[in-house]
Length: 303
Image (cartoon, rainbow, N blue to C red; front, side, top):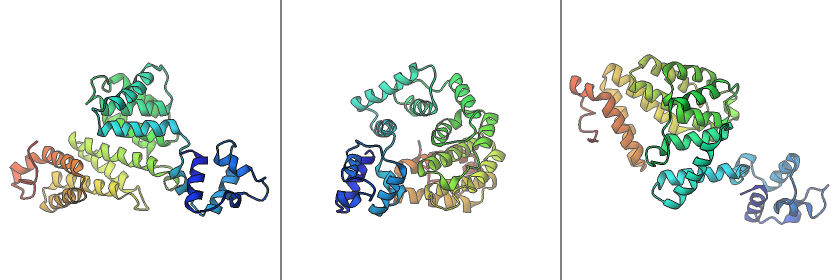
């Protein structure tokens, strides 16, 4: 919904009449034009209206989209990710993909959308190319010149961090972390920023770059000071336990991993639980042979 539609929706749900919303210095038709999207609203007036509605600005903007184009893209992207064989929505997303592909210069939002399609859908749709070396250089150069990472920069980094070389990843992480003004950032921006490190920690484990794994775990542990993103903190703890298990073989760490998988299954996140099982099996197979660890044998299904 746009601003006018959102104001009308909230006002009617609160059973407030339009005339009750009009600030003293406006004529009686002003608020009606705002709700009908016929008048640009000033920030001071919006603040006064939200006070009358008794609603916080953060909550209001969960109902309101100031970027309907991106909202449409995000909705289409996630629908296709869950329903890749739906031909109608597939065509719509591919239309966006080919349009972006033709553009010789893409702004940061266009790059973010374009490469998010490539990184995911190249595995399921033959029409979508994989990430090339040229792509990586383009993305790396773009992000290397960023002075302040906003949402689309973090989204692009999150989707492509695993494609960079060790040195490239180090450089970009130094630029992007710690997150400047983290407390003021919106949830989505922080989600992509946190996911970047989760992805990077995982890939360094697969590369057996354990010193880097520890370094990125420590950077990640310094984030989310308000403890508001439990998914991030649980995944981070799982990866820390996995690192400890690989390096020490102490059964207590595998027991905590087992507990994490059980929680995922209990809340119905079966795909995530399966991915964790597969990752643990791939990274700890030598431990099963060497130490006859009691927790991993039988826990992990054959792929």
